[in-house]
Image (tube, rainbow, N blue to C red; front, side, top):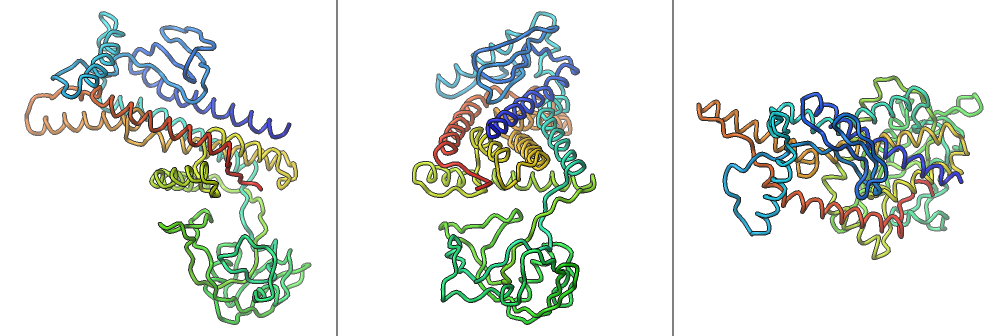
Length: 438
């Protein structure tokens, strides 16, 4: 039951995020005078709709997106379109359908007649709304729940040094050297306060000090049962995985785990929930954006990995892209996980972070400068504005509107590509899902 609750919450959260994304387009369009015949959440057959003013609002059967229909998206043809007949007919039919919606006497209400700044405001409004939703989710988390972060308190002590190539192995073998922390008598629950001459208050400081002290014997001070204890440790220099800013192991072009020599003590941190100031929200948004753009830039390779995971049985990493099914499974894992001890606060915190991260992803993904994404329309408006500015500076006549209808073949190609990726992710999420909580 708890699993289904998580799935339901994330479905509702996604639908609301999509609905508000479209509101971000709808409101400025109406304010700028553009007629908006339809505002729809979802695609396919209409399940329920009502009309208010001149706009039909509704919900459709396939909840995988949404749209607002703006009158006059494409300008009249200014010069002949070249290319295959099928392409010319596609562009011509779309242009005619767009222009036919313009009522007599309302030519000034067509989208294509807007100035470049107004077009950009309308198209950026959707992603901006997702950014606002993410900021609200992160604000609630940092102020009401706090953020889980590693501390200098130790949760686990390794008894031996397992080679990096055998990290899936948990038991120690006779040939494995003892871990320095266990040899020094450290125990779970100890809180490290200093290593060498450096006082440490965060896990990042402690981890960096251990890495730098490889091969050296240094003093280590820790608290146990309220008493300060000092001992000596010698972190071993061993090959450890290279990770990104999120702690995800990195692989080279051949699929081999990247490693580097650094000091190893054999300790794992305990995670504590710490309330954060409001100034932490921009940092969280920046981290989430950075992670999303990393995924976007490496998407072709990541989708190849998803293909191998779906049809070749290869393991999916925690940084693997997921689709709507994968997001639902992650939400179900959160609400049914024993690791969260059934605590409603911890589950709520994780769900809010998930919804916030999804909205950051929606914002960043929609800003990709390719039609039919919002970023593609922004790119078209910027091109139009730049072309007019250059003509004005050169004292030439206004070149008129950019004929964005000519980009329709590209838009259809991008749509087919995105649909194929979505189907692949759904299949992979069903047969070989990503699980954040094992």
